[in-house]
Length: 424
Image (cartoon, rainbow, N blue to C red; front, side, top):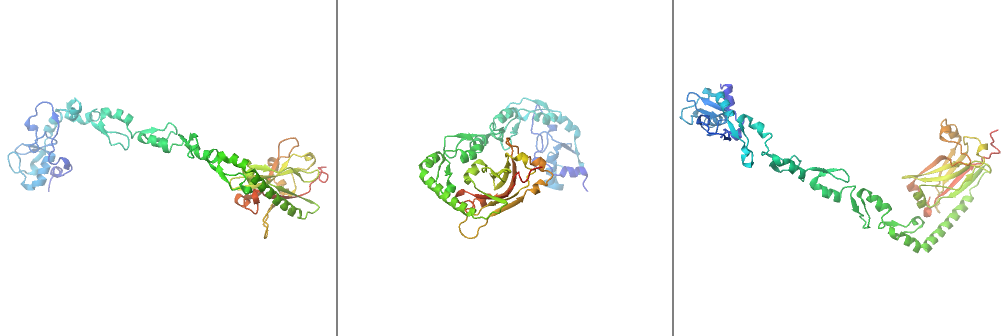
């Protein structure tokens, strides 16, 4: 059974130094041979002494010898057989060696340090002539510590901040970043016009301002299918006035036909019917919201308009009460009965009108009405909006509802006059 010391000696935990385990330093002054390993001939590192001959070997060298020759191992000096249980660490010798003076291994690159061997690790932690790696991630440059700061100030792998967008990139990427991806870098218009603008504004410029962008004629919904560069659009409009006028005339005939059909709708004595030919869709898209001319619930009733508001995905039809001359004589909240209809203008087959009927008595009973709906006051720019019918834009733009881009809206309202409904 081997002792723990013998097991430690035979343990091959340092295979790189198994054959030559001595110190490879330039010692200051002459070194007595008693401090040299009799196997590797270097200054002893972690020395062991052989009994009884007294010769010394590095721990790693002696362990390698035993692992190679086993119980046939002999002393390399006097050739006597070695017994592993009679080999011991020589701590006295070790203390003397680690207190010997050595020169820094980097003397060839300029370091002139001399000091005790046991202080060498501390010295190398700050020695300016030791080779170190650049701290920039990705850089494989090996350089002297004294040159590290200067190198890292110009290293292509250092992280720098783009002065336009403040994004962090490697220095070698900065030029490509500005040329290809930086959203705040001024770049020429991708359409080839003469404008330079930040990259993040390019999409908006192309869609709304670039003179080279190909755009549709604003009278597309009337039937014009021309597409021209934006810079030529005015020339197109001026040069196609006759064709556009013919389209308008055609649309006018269609509207007259629809109005004639609407007039055939029977009306009772207590209801009035109003029909509004809404502006072309492109005008609604441009303005966002358009109101009809004012109508009245009766000869001396509430005044209202029909409002059409285009949003991203849908369009809302609303009744908007506006200030009228008789408002102070009419009861409040507003309690009228409305129907609003988007007319199906399809010429053949069954029609599918989109309709919504609302009794404003329901609004009047809402406890929040006094806060949400203030009475219009004659002479003031204040109105009350009642959203009634929401229609998907794709539906509204269908030919059956907006032939030539024009929708027809019918409002049916119960008469409401101040003579019949005075607050007295």
